[in-house]
View 1 (tube, rainbow, N blue to C red):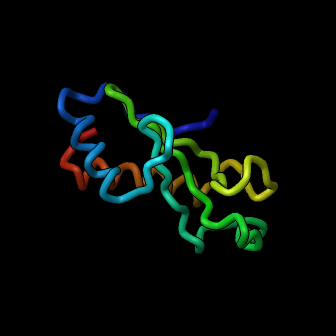
View 2: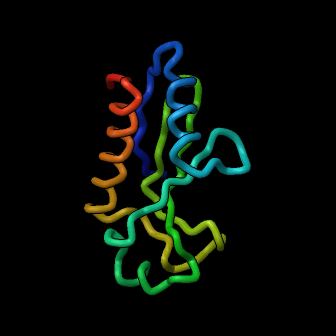
Length: 110
């Protein structure tokens, strides 16, 4: 799995991140997983055509010592679809910027 991971969270940072994630994004029904919707402007032509699959999301997994974000863009409405794909360069940069901004907004240095 391709992913962006920030590890070695310090004591208390898990709770801060959990609060920020709870306030901003949809919490999945399993574990500490959150869905971050990908802006429509970043979708590929194929992804944009799949309006029934919208919104495409990236999964964020928060653990006591780390936060990981997949580089796989997926739909929450189907297990498989050809609109699901690993992030292209622009999407990957957006994912990294989004996670870095989350940490900055939460007052956590990485």
